[in-house]
Length: 241
Image (cartoon, rainbow, N blue to C red):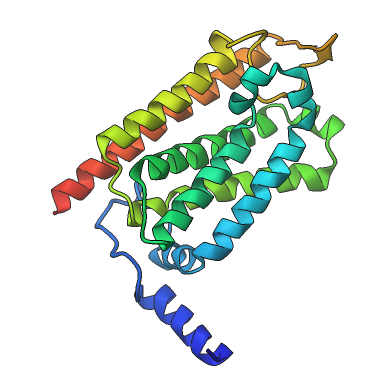
């Protein structure tokens, strides 16, 4: 295929939505992206998948010191953002392959919404601490890349209906994360991402008040709002049909 025809097909997909799932008439608060932006993301799905897989690999590298301080049984619950980028990569890949999975779709929305906003929340709330230990380019990268995850969340509604059972699985997974991250750790201390004020002392991670409570409040609110948004999307889709 010539570059000219590839560009023409991409332009038709972005402008007209050719070959893409139809957009349901959702209100702006459930579908905040311009439709052209949704179309572009879906048209470049494989590039988005690849980017998120790179982000997943980077995220596991970023968590390397925390992995060393956590017991292995807790490792699946530690790398929150890398798991979220893996979920969105898997969600888009399965959709492109014609094997879309609603549980994966719900997990991807929850992960991109929750971690896409929780990380900027703590980066801003504890900016002085982060900037004391993190170079400004890395700080800006973490802030911008996580906000892009939120944008990714809002293309999923184009190919997912968020059935109640799938949302329940996502609530269970991210509810479990909140529980062990802030309230009742699986083993040892709570397992949330390290933030300024915490230290690894003699192999154990410290959790200082009120930093711990502020981070917990953000996480719980985002889990609740993800639940509301997915179920509200389902209701509006059913009503429109």
